[in-house]
Image (cartoon, rainbow, N blue to C red; front, side):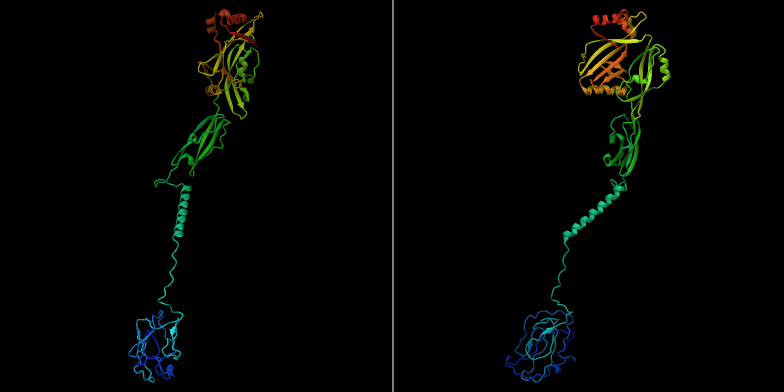
Length: 455
């Protein structure tokens, strides 16, 4: 028997007669077929291996041909030469038909020739459990879900990009156009007035390599209520620069004009004009003492300190006369509107009156031209007031003065200049300014003014 590949094709145990009548075939006893039908010293009971080849389903049952042989694909046995001689045992011949098994039915195993009780039937087959079926298809592996894979890749890219941006930004190497981004901060030396607003960011610094809205300003140390220098910082992408803000008080110190007689005493607080709380003192107290010994007009330097320890100085007018000024005769015009404004103006000449040795009220030689402006618009009022505080003088309706008093309640500003007696005498005649009654009569009768005496 040829069994090199251990492949059995169309194996059927049985015989056929000449008349193709299998059912009428004489039955000869085959008592020891298992013992005599040997295949290379292997009994038919042994189950030859099939070289791990897969056993498929047999396409059809074997047929018996007219020559008395079993004919099907590759043959296992030739036909019985003499169907009438059942005593002879045919030698089985195994034909290899390229591992194709046909004409047999398998229930999952190698064919086993354990007994031959039913000649012409298909014996059960068995095969090793380790063998696989070549014709059965292996299960296809599941393809990975493409959507999940894409989402995973996107998340990984986002994480890498975000991390890279964070590192570049906070290590100051975030660049534009492939070049390193150089941040340069230029701080400005800013000076503001006392009680002004804290400066805006764009007033304090300029930057290159970025924009101000990406920068952080720390202005917490700036105190606009106190005169002095204060530090501030600017930080842009980790780069920090320090600058300074100087708070100054450029507004003039408003002071009164005082009139004293030779030998009088004087306190600095008497010059106070503003409603703010200041502590006043003379810059040179000894100098003021000398002024009070001699008649004349003097400029007195006064220093004032506010509750925040801000200090500033101002110049006040002091008039010293031989005879004490007992009061003032003020002769005023009627209020007049200034065209194109909300202001009304009233002009008044105010004469200092003293008593001579003959007990007669006379002109002391000291007088003032006063101009009172009343505002109907608060904004316009504050504009002139701010100009005076900033510049130390103010001009209203072509009248300029450094001596000013104001009243916020009535929105009134009064400018005062010293009367020039020479000009006054040339305009009205000196004879009208000798005694109190001369002045009163001339101003009321000739100039149409209203005069009021006050102490």
